[in-house]
Amino acid sequence: MGTARGARRERAGTTAVLPVVVLTAVLAVGCTTRGDDPSDDGRGPDRRPTGTASAQPRTAGPAALAVKIDNVGPARPHTGLNAADVVYVEQVEGGLSRLMALYATRLPDVVGPVRSARESDLELLRQFDRPTLAFSGAQRTLLPLIDEAPLRAEPPGRTPRAWFRGAGRPAPHDLFLRPGALLPAAPGPAALTTGFRYGAAPAGGREVASRTVTYPSARFTFTWSGSRDRWLVSMDGRPATTTDAGRVAPATVVVQYVKLRRSGYFDALGNNTPFTETVGSGRAEVLRDGKVHEVRWKRATAAGGTAFTTNDGAPVRFAAGQVWVVFAAA
Image (cartoon, rainbow, N blue to C red; front, side):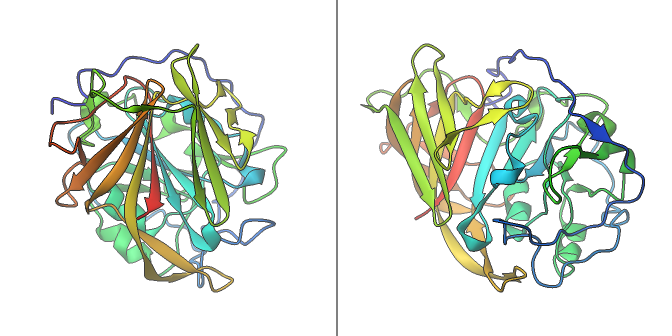
């Protein structure tokens, strides 16, 4: 691929296991609306176990693990997020946000809290070779699309031993995943078929101390730390930390401007689920090494990765380490 396969350096760190309660029953699919999170799981959620939701064969090659992660106040701090190779940020109902974390080079002991899948996730994940998608559930009408998607679906009902409820958090923000129960080992960098390139920074760029991206009901700020050579993440005005590896600090942040359109799905309050179009082209900002670079992005087909280029067509390379991609409305 000439991209993520050769230039991904290993990030050290140990993972502490959260306090847990024993999973005594198959977890219900779909969560009720709680507190400041009106986004889950939509009108007409399916509450039956989805252990048979995906009968598709597993890929013979390396397959990345994708985990849909909750991202409202009661869901923080996260666990296992710093081990992800790529973290996607997408807007959901009510202007809130969800994360999609991709794991290939390292599997943490625990990831979470985990929440439900959205229609946009299926298009986003087409660029990977039959990835494993771990999610808490989905609307009944979305389940057939998940069945047909080229991925291995892993809701709680399929592999119950991989899931547990964490102590000290309110439901539905307490569902956690043990990745080792789904994959025997990290698949390696060959599973990262994103189209990303890594290496020296492009020429030019503008020095910037921080960059903020806002959704109607969420805010992300990335502040450059010269001592760490990383962008320190804040969410809704507070530092983003993890229970197992400290502050969230990617090496590269991409603000990718995309089209958001109405989908055929609504949450329990009647809010429409926005569909994030990740196939197409447009402008983007690449933040690395304390600078911001104005670039272009293009993903010609759903099965292909996303190419980032300068205005004159030269490929843009990211810094080695974790990449955050924040989808913002064009």
